[in-house]
Image (cartoon, rainbow over the protein chains, first blue to last red):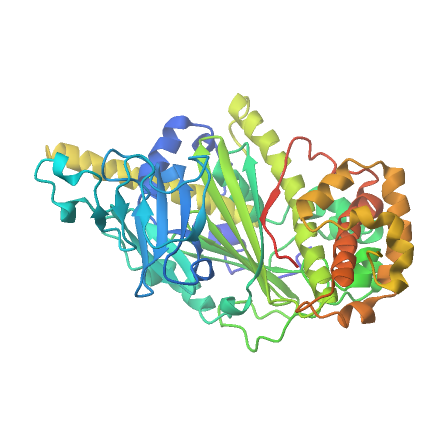
Length: 424
Length: 108
């Protein structure tokens, strides 16, 4: 039985012009396809690497490991308060410039300049080479020519993005209609943050697949609800309020949440006493009217919007006025690092802090169930025993994501072919 | 010296649950038996349930040591509520080798 209306075509999948045939996951089990994704996607699109609050003053910096783009980047605020991004690499002999103890571990801090551990070359906050050890031993070395290799950087709504594309589309334009629709959301007020990280044994797209559909929620997570409620949810199944696609980006708008629940017996004792749960504190802070792109169906049952800004940045806005981000950073065709940060308005008292803690811990319990399922899926997909998988209409955004990735790769290959044909 | 405000003296035997990091609270949960978790839950839950007003009157800015300890103990109760109220075992079912680790968390 349908609970929410669908487009005139009869399904979301047909509405967006996507195939209704069984899907194939060859793009998630192939080292060769991943190598193409690195070139076609991760070296071409804008990548969100952090937020402006991480760089509070001149000299604040952090590093980000981007295996998918085969580099490490250094993000810093210069003396004029502008953000700069560089390949995290000394221009002398290629040592990684900023790291402590473990070269692969990300670091952050504040400094006046960057000094290479190897031979002591120094760079200022604009990446300019300012000191060379025994400079007289070099041959006509022009320090002006050996600054840090810059990377394009821009900020959208406080989110810091970089791109390795030498000719990038302006970031705001890249974020498109859905980005414009959430502009003005008071991200800057939500500075109480909890960050989690996990190494996941699956292709990066499979975890996005898991978080762009809620068809699984009443089944995989059924024991997280009290049993009567769980039976009701399973019978009800899942239908989104609406879906949207804009270029490579996608979103799903969903009902749900218990804020507050119609019947207190629907929720667990810890939720009943703290007035909080997966969807956060039942009574969120007053942040005024939400931007027009949030809850696009304008449904009174609205609970959460999940945006996927291609390729790997998800933004979830929850009805009780808090948000979280997901990032999926590939490290090989069948591994990735998953990061999530939950952002709340700073709690005023111990009770509000505990309400937020319950939302955070509930997220972790759900995430642990999701993460292990992914490894189980990846290993079986790699067996190749079955290659065709039927997807339902509530899995429409999975089709879209995999189609977009294949399109980026095909475009990259045809461009490379055109260049080769010209003999360039 | 008491770890908690006077009216929470019943929690003194469980002071080792007053752990400031979520990683440590979760670690203690999954290395405890269900009997230990049940005993802690039974002692702490009624006090949390009757203390909403007290906790709302404990501002985060300038929080006292005793209130901070109470906050960490009740944070442990939150993670312990999952084995007691959902799982009937200390770990998340079917989560096997998966782990999701905190890297940044507020204090408090």
